[in-house]
View 1 (cartoon, rainbow, N blue to C red):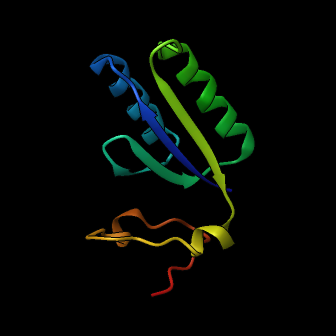
View 2 (view 1 turned 90 degrees about the vertical axis):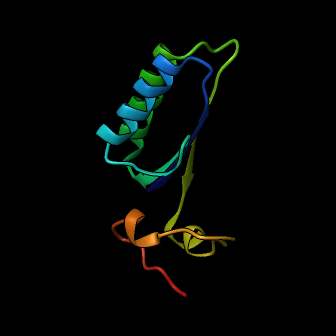
Length: 95
């Protein structure tokens, strides 16, 4: 399943740790606080659990949003974005 991980974390230290964990799980950075990639449900739950232990749940926020390949294929992008740098396995980009 394709997952989007999007967060708003106030602490630089913990924001970097969450970003590093996203990269460790094989997600690709889309924007500074947005990652996308293929994860199993179990891996997504593990990542969310690790993030929960890192962030301040009173002030910070993290979304892990599941997105099927069909729905991901219907995305719309406005502006400059290099999809080749963020290529996801099992997804076909249609232009």
